[in-house]
Structures are given as structure tokens and as C-alpha cells.
Image 1 (cartoon, one colour):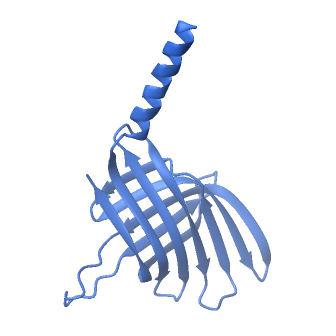
Image 2 (cartoon, helix red, strand yellow):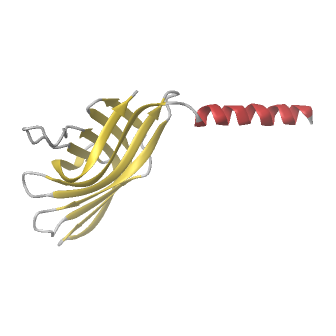
Image 3 (tube, helix red, strand yellow):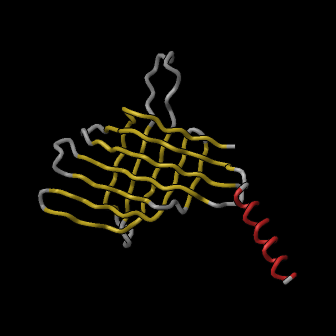
Length: 162
């Protein structure tokens, strides 16, 4: 009985220490980005890295072509890697992409590499800087199946480190 109680206390202390591990890098964003070709990505994501190395977060990204005839819905349930050096954060993890076009529907399981830059400055800045977002999805053979880079037009993203 005493061993069980000791084990219970030890595991509780470990859980509390992991739960209280300080965040060393953080990024989150929500909004719509637009690229030079008129392609739009609606996005919502968050990611963080704790002092103990634990990475948390995930996100959803929905691409729509200028004509609206092609879409790509990307879901990342968990980031496996995360790095931040203000104003840039990079994260990656397993992704599921559902492509829809007049030719039909196609699903790809792969990995997403996300790079965001928190470039927006104060409203008084004479230069109109926009946050940027870049998505690259590769399939299991490491071939690029989707690439997008654009400037945030609605919403915001932030990158912070400690």
C-alpha cells in the first residue's frame, strides 16, 4: 500500500511539473491570407514549445483558388516540431489534405511545414507591413503536393518567445 501511495504521489508531482513547464515559444493566428494569384487561405492555428521540449498545438487551413473552382482543406492535429525566433515561427506535423476540383476529390496524407512571420507594426507606421504565411505539404514520398505563400489581409498572427 505504501509503495502504491509513493508511486501515486511521484506520478502526480511529475504531471504537475510537466503541466507547469514554462512556454519558451508561442505562435497563434486566425484570419485570411491572399497571394499574388488571388488564392485565399483561411487559417486558424496555434503552436507552442515548452521548456521541457514538449510541442503542442495544431491548425486548419482552407485554400480557395481565385475562381473558386479548386479548394484544399488541410488539417494538422498536432505539431511535431516548433521553433520561434521573433518575428518568425516554423512548425510542422502530420497533415491530411482534401483537394476538391471539377475533376473530383483527392485525399493526401502527408506532412505540413508552416512558416509564419509576424511583421505587422503599429497603425502609425508609414510602411504597410503585413504578416505572412507559407504552407508546404509533402506526401509520404516527400514530393510537394501543395504550396502557398501569401500576406494576411484579415485577422492577425503573433509570434512570441521567452
